[in-house]
Structure formats: C-alpha cells, structure tokens
Image (cartoon, chains in turn orange, red, yellow, green):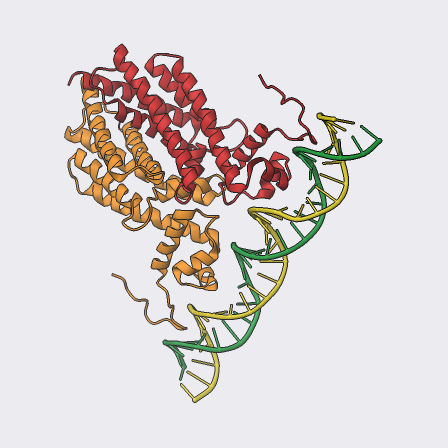
Length: 211
Length: 211
DNA sequence: TGATTTTTGTACCGTATCGCACGAAATTAG
DNA sequence: CTAATTTCGTGCGATACGGTACAAAAATCA
C-alpha cells in the first residue's frame, strides 16, 4: 500500500511528509493560523524551515494542505460509516460518536472541528480556505441528505420528508458539538444531547407521516 | 440618557470609548485575535497605542472587552425579541432574522457570529475567552428553552416536549447560520433553511403530541 | 571514483510586533 | 495666573516573525 518511491537520487529525507502534515495540522488546530509560527511548525514537524518550504510552500500553503488533509481524512471516515448501511438511528449516532472522538482527543484539550473552529475564521479573507471549507460542508450535508433519502426509500422515514432540511439540522448538530466541545462542555453532556437530538430527528419523520 | 460625565480634571479625551470598542471588535471579528495588530486597532479606533493601553489594558484585555461587549449587545436584543411574546414561529423567525442581520452586515463581507467564528478559536488557550463564550451560549440556550417552556404552557407545543433538547437544536441552527454565512452561503439560502427548520421544530412538537 | 542530485542545517535579512517612556498639550481647581 | 491632573503623540527598544541564501552532507548514476 505505502509504496516506497523507488530509490530517489539525492540525499534521503529524514522526515515523513504525511506525519509532518498531521503535526502541522494539529498545531494550527489548537492556535489558529496567525498564532502558529514557523518556528513552532518547524519544531513540531522536526523539519527545518527550508525543508518546510521545499515540501509545502509558504506558511499559507501549508495551512491549506492541512485543511485539505483534514477534510479528506474526516470525509473518508464519514463516507465509510454511511456505507455500513446500519439503521438510521445507529448511523447517526456513529457519526456523532465519531466526530466527538475527533473533538475530544485522548491526549490534549478539547478542540472541536478544525474547519469550524479555525478554518472558518480564515475564510473571510482567504479564498482558498473558504473553498476548502465550503467543499467540506457541501460533501458533509450531501452525505446526510443521501442517507435520509435512503431512509425514506426503506420506510425508516415517511414519504414527504424534507431531506435537505433534515440534513441541515443534522449538520447543525455537528457544528454545535464542535463549538461547545471547545468552550468546555463535557463529552458526556454533548453525547447525551446528540442522543436526544436524534430522537427528535426520527420523531420529526413521524410527524410528517401524519400530515 | 448619554450623561456627559461632569467635567473631569485633565485634558479631555478625543475619542468615544464605546465607539472605539466597537471598532476594535469589528477588526478582531474579521481577522481574529493574533492577526489584528495594535497598529490596525490604533488606526481603526483613532486612539494611539498608549491611549488604548490606558483605556483597555493590553491587547488581550481589549479583546476580552470586545467579546463581552458583543455578548451584551446581542444578548440584550435577543432578550427583547423574546419579551415581545409573539407566537412561537414568529419569535423564532425574528431571532433567526436578527442573527442573519448581524452575520451579513450591510457594508462589508459576511462574518458570522463573533464568538463562534473568532472567540471559540481563542477559547482553547484563553480561559477568559472561554468563560465569556460559555456564558454567552448558556444564556442563549436558556432563552430558547424558556420560550419553549412557555410554548408548552400555552399549548403551542404539546406537553412532554423535551424543551432543553429543542433549545439545543434551535441554537445549533444559529451556529449553522454563523458558520455557513462566513464561508459564502447566501443570506437568502440561509433564511430559507431557517424557515424550513422552524417548520420542523414545530412539527416535532406535533409528533410528541401523539406519543 | 567522480559527477549529479536532493536534502539538511546554519545563519541571516528586513520587517512587524507589543508594550512603554517621556515630554508636550489641554483642561480644571484654587 | 499657577499648580494639578489627565490625555496626547512621538518615538523607541527588545523581540519575534516569515522567508531565503548558501554550503555541507548524503544519497544515486555512470
């Protein structure tokens, strides 16, 4: 899988580019773009600054790479969860459990979603950051909506359900978990909220049914 | 109302402290804490740096003052809206319209909620910022919950409604509007989403009723 | 072995940053 | 008019920042 590129010409690298990108992402994630210095990044990635430059371009480009990496990572796992084809309640709870795993790392402080907590702040003046964030959310909403449409097809949700809006609400709850985790709410409290919210999402379907 | 403080002793100020605080807040709002320099703040507030220091303390203290100011401002208006005692749907839509007014300023780029977009990023390493944000959200959720409890009392929502969770969902939608406004969604799209989401919140009540 | 290629690591440059010292300016109190 | 008080505004100092130049190091190729 991880094919070592067939012996390259010059001096070999002493760092792992993917690991370095994850370390950089984590640093940006906790401090934001501007408050993270190249010295910090250099220390965390164990690459000196010229190597950072060679590998990723300037600080802004490294930041974009970190955002894109996060988006790919999380998007792939969410796609996998939805593909498992569990019952609707179970799929939703797996998604909320998964994002809570991300927002509350085992080691380190609660951090929320990288894009919501950090990326969106940059989005106003950084068109690339804005595009990456918008793309991530579009894919995210789309995943929820697709699952809800399937639920209508299988009878888990009644016909006439407004799947697009329900997907927006499901995404809203993810944003809520992100925001609240970073400002001190406990994981247990947020998990309980997610459960109750899922109850309501399913009940909403019931209401529509009788309409 | 605006009582001029009875002639103080020394040289009079050339700036309006409240106006200056709003200008500082707007600058932080668009760029974040670290990317906003004292030179920027000095220019925007038309106070030179030593005056800023004298009036607000260091940059971090000024930032906290800006957050607290925002929290007071928005909190007061939301309290006012809820106090109007309009029908539930109307109250909710007034709230969503009001926050969209904030998130989409008439002049300038979409910016989302100051606390969600900027404050939460600081919350991880800045205990004061975290406290201000947590207090703001607690008050916000409480306002929604109180309104939903009243709705149960008046029959707008059926008995047995889980008002705390419903308040969390209503707040989630506000977070959604904040996040999405800043990454390029149009105000019209978000307003339409809010309307559909309110439909669902009210329908959820209906479902519970039949339980 | 010697030329070539790629990465490493030090050292540095120009600039921006935060915070404050200090004297001038503008007002009131007596 | 003089003293006291408060703010203003210039200017600066120490540090931190992003980014790069340059030569040494470590590998492959012929």
